Amino acid sequence: MILSPLSQADRYSALHPRFAAAFAFLRRADLKDLAPGRYDIDGNNLFALITNGPGRGWDAGRLESHRAYMDIQYVADGIDQMGWKSTPTCTQPQGEFDTAKDVVLYDDTPNAYVATGPGSFTIFFPEDAHTPLRSEGNLHKVVVKIAIA
Image (tube, rainbow, N blue to C red; front, side, top):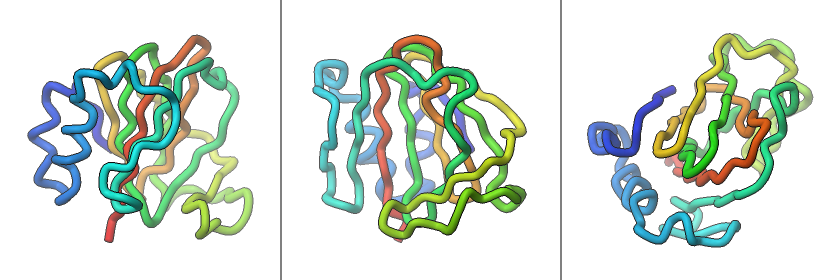
């Protein structure tokens, strides 16, 4: 997992060939004006999901992890108290991995919480189970999904 302000994103671009395009999308001047929904950057290889509304609250949500995609979760407004736990140490899956949705949920408790404020992002790799949208207030977020393959 990585936590960083967007102003420092270039230092992470070399980690994956699609990261530069992902960060370019997050730097769009009109980002805060885009309506909630999906925005294709490179089809299913790279796309953004924009949400703007109330968070789930501190006690809501479950840890989740992905296999086909990495997440860059950017907070445009609000503070997201995201939970984190190493995926290999999760022992309480709620069910089987859902290949169609690229997700498995866990009943495990996060080992750490990361307060991610406006202008900052987290990168979650498949090894990072995470619980997003843990805000009591309004969150304006952009989740960029990056295909690993």
